[in-house]
Length: 308
Image (cartoon, one colour):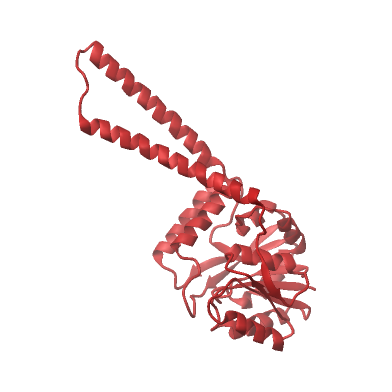
């Protein structure tokens, strides 16, 4: 198998036919030995029925049906685990990432790269809030980690088989694939493109999922939040010690006792807020340790027409 394409699907029944047609046309320009692996991630509409119909009538189409919604990154991982291509493309199923770019990614790979990611030149149909928060997150992540994660990129990329095999040896449950691929290394390059807006439906990544995704990226590739907790604890302790010294000095030497409900409650709330923030950051890391220690399967396949 020369080429595998992994397409996570969540409530995309209206565009599956167009998605397949454009993917097949793009991949046919590269090779006749390719597979299109659609991973149904617990869709609540008729996406899975459409996928079965598609796979029954088109030789290049295959499906993996997960037992429930495990999330985008896990769905992609399931496709990577079962793919067989020498080169593998990851692309979302909402057609915001144009399949027509795949031959260009392949041409770039022919120059000797192991990873070619699609970098967004523009992002149509996305709010100013989403654009600015995404840029802030990636700049923050880049500044607190040793991993050079490219700006303005998603999971749309082509990777070599050796990268896929390296990903299989990374057992963490909280997947952040674009960070993992950057961490793996090898020769990487980019192809610029203009991202289209969604044709149908709503994004599968509301604010709550975006925050969880961001937390997975930060806790998976940086321990600086823990160092921040330590520094905050040291500074608060130092400030508190100085306030205590001043209070004793004022009481015994100046004979002027510091009184006041306002100052007391402000200091208590400040220290309490620092403590809760610190506990929350530590708790995020402990939660991820607990998830990995449980060692549950990353996903469960209900049915598939591919041999594992």
